[in-house]
Length: 91
Length: 454
Image 1 (cartoon, one colour):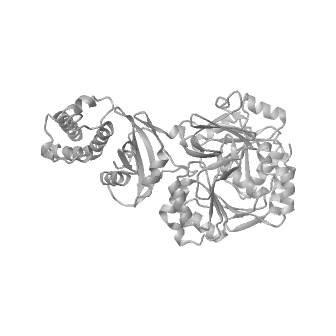
Image 2 (cartoon, rainbow over the protein chains, first blue to last red; image 1 turned 90 degrees about the vertical axis):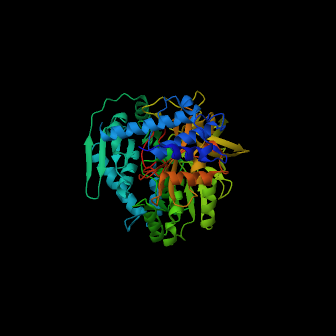
Image 3 (spheres, rainbow over the protein chains, first blue to last red; image 1 turned 30 degrees about the vertical axis):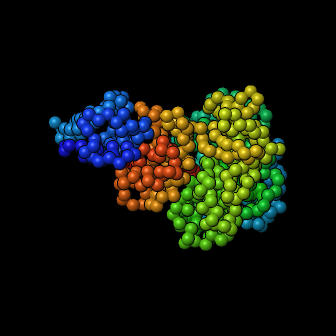
């Protein structure tokens, strides 16, 4: 599975309510404080990730930790997609 | 109490057209004849007073005459249409049914049972010598409740003669709305046109062919009628009145309907299986504000919820606790706003989605989304979410191959500025299955991640 970086950044940009280029989203960016995302924008980002990548993010996952840094969100998503690919290949 | 007055009316109406079904016209004289026949049948089959009879049939002149014969014989009647077979065994048990009857063109099939009789409400009805009506609520979640009415008391509300209409029997025979259509029309000497199909094309075709004047229906059906534009292919000029109830009507839809059909009067109805159909007055044809008849009902609003007290209320549930409080008030579960004597229904308490502590009414969002091009129908639901408790999601029927991501973007753009951000659906599911049930009420199944293209 390819790196979901660009698609993920597009999702964040389309939901953050400000003019932002993909390069401005740093690995260590805190999505809550740096982008000042409120709960509804966060909810929409998660929903868009689920819809775009066809995955379900379960309610017991520690979303707050995951969203603290961009890199942890990306890493979570990569793991999820790799896992799905492994499951799909039956390995 | 006797229903001789109703039979007398039918005799008086004589050769006037009473029922049209599948191009066959029957008069009131035919109804009287069928009543005589089924009266003899009830005696011949030794159906005893107080027995519970499940009538597994759609409406026909025969089933109607059989119902009349059973009322005269002081039976308790549970009509069940073919649309509810999944719960049929439960129905038989809950109603403590003595007989199951199926009537077709040629024959009457009757099955006798030996139930254990223990329900105190049924015993009381037998003791008092009253006839009863059991209606099973549609119960979108869990098992349906069985509502027991005193049939004589319910019928007494139709004694006052009203305006005569050629009326399409759109609502089902086992629904309080369907029963109301039937008795309202026939007690007044009007004509029942049996709806042979309930899709928009069939209904429009039947209106044109039979010169229907009154269409009692639901806001969901009117949404489909408006969105499909099928009405353009039919002559609906006979229609004088459309009544709508069973779920909230959105003002923008009503306003569009009034503009599209300026010669038709739109009238809201309000009723529940538990209370019967209540008389009310709308502010105007294009208004969803209504005033209940203060002489007939007592009304109060507590914490935005409508409570009612009425003489036509049911005797009780056969399989659930008594919902009336000590003073006889019934909590309708409808959230309302008030303007003087007028009330506007916002939605069912159970449909409300709590997003971060703020209440969201699905109907308001559905109304807006239905204004978008390419959307055939929409049902807004709540989904659990760890951040806001719940989020708003929407299931939609569309007529194109648009994908959910693109549609969500369109919905977000369309609703932006018109709805508060937390009301704009965070998730969009494109589904194939229809979003309404057999009673043309919108299905809003809550909470699960599911289905469709998303």
